[in-house]
Length: 440
Image 1 (cartoon, helix red, strand yellow):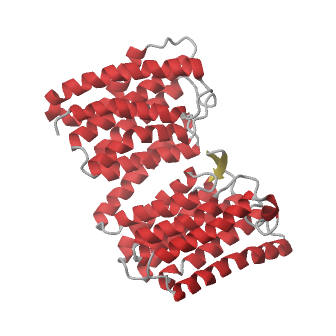
Image 2 (tube, rainbow, N blue to C red):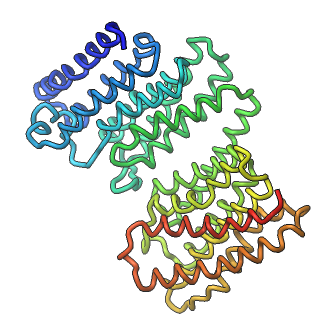
Image 3 (cartoon, rainbow, N blue to C red):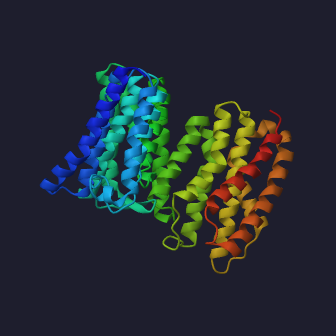
């Protein structure tokens, strides 16, 4: 690297690490809360990083800078003396957070992905820096309505402020820079703001510092080339899914973060593939709400985001397979249908095992999963009915074996296996591979 690049790196590091003791001193004198001190550093770091497109014209110096910044922050986290001293502004909160360690790698990742496009870099960074701080501080100070997220909670008021600020972080740069017209910027800002808000709502332990900027980059990259009618259609899909899920939240055992994750999963299926791919996950959610309401299970169980991630493991590979041409549309739609049928069979077996007076019947659970969760997707493959017969029989047999296996594991090792949700997702994905028997 050139001497000018090393000088720029040294200046950025100097500003960042002189800022830590400065903000710590100001926070002590003003009596600011630890959260305010931490978010002040968050904003300061973000604003410094926002200058990178004008300082660096290639990715290598930013990657070097990210490594040099992350190492000291990691050392501060490791050693108690440093945490209580220079790092007290970052580590003054009670909840565990890895945000400060993830911040620099996330910035470098987005800078590399943007490949010189200032809008694709700046907008995700502004959302991470300003919207996240605004939502956290407002929610901490004035938030009243809480919802579960990971191992803690967030507030509805904080999420609303996050959405509005994220909307402005996208809308204003796009309009001021003339990248798109006002109408395009409006719809892009609305969609990106809601998606970023939900992404922040499901993130825990500071992982939003990585998930928000990277996720916003990919969202923005897909939204900017679209025409206004396509943007309006995506906005309506998002709003409809949000209304459906939140309307069912009253009878759902999913906590707030898991509900937001359900909306994101359904939206990914509908937008990345097409709207038919959202039908099997929606059928599983509808059956979950109906069963939970019928047996009054709300309050007896608390399902977190990992329950939704299990479904994502099973169905997102088929969404991506359709998007990138790894499988035909028929194979991918059948695959996600078989996967969601398997997941509903697992859920039905687990519910019957927990509800008094109910007898576990894997054949019944598999039939229910196939008819309720798989059929909404398979019905659109009617022209391929002959080619579907063998894959469907194979999938049904595999579903039965998988459901019986999961039931035995639940009965004998419940609470003793870490990451059982991953196992369930992978088994459902394995069952769905029967879709590959359909001729491409």
